[in-house]
Length: 381
Image (cartoon, rainbow, N blue to C red; front, side, top):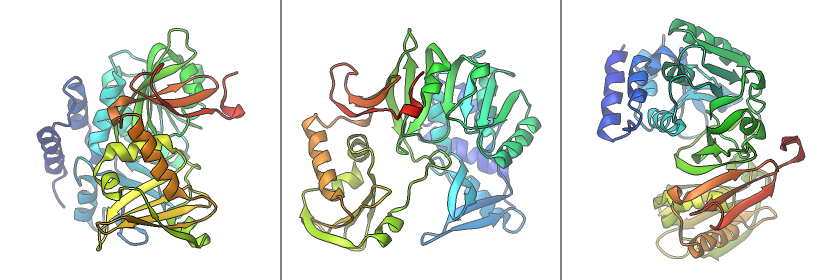
């Protein structure tokens, strides 16, 4: 069995060498080193086999593989639960844990609500900063909640863990100074804004590609702020969309055409890929190198898909379903370029009682995308 404390030290050094520990929040590194990943990891971890399924690694049967999954590197998360072949919980990669805690701007004494307890490690780090009795964490899965309580009790207690729907929050303990979610949402629940004090901060993953920090307005009737960084996040339980493969297998090819979309630019420029998520929020896109060049796979989670490939010349798109997603993405990229090609850091979000939209450069005067009415069930009373 590899020495876990040595692996933790190696991870901390790698974070430091890459400049990933936040300089403005030195408490984050201290808390992470005081409460290392292995103290919160279950005895079974999971890894994608690169083809068609997640494979389990048990600590007792293969302790070295288990340890390598846990300490794979600053940018690698560790899958801790798989249900029906899909990952449903994880220990987030160390870099994004640090980045989101830095974005939260947490101070001692801040009342804090966390949505998505998982193994309990993030709640432990929050409590290390905010103080005992200042953190409430809500977990949808009762089995995960039970394990988190065990982990948190063993590492100092002082965190209240509840089983419930994170979208509802925990109104009886609010208002909060800070709210943080560890899972991705498409629409920020208005309950989170209502339960945050004016001037308070909400940090949450959005769209599974990045995370945003919102500040609640003085009148409490809106929250607005900037995108903070990129990372892949699991969605709220029960909201997982269908995979590209599932959509593709049910809808045959209906078109094969040339498309004016630079796949290489998407593959190499995270800003452009994120911008497509902003401008066409219902389309999921991923890119990868192939034997012949580069390819992009897009789907809407329901009935339409596209595969776009290039071997150095014009891109070819194979598309299925009622929509032409490759053409929609090409139009979205042109729209982004016409807006001045805003980078990730130029994009922000605003949530009002009845709508949510993203904008570039300035929340009042900049271009807006995704302006939509929030479903009636999610609106403010």
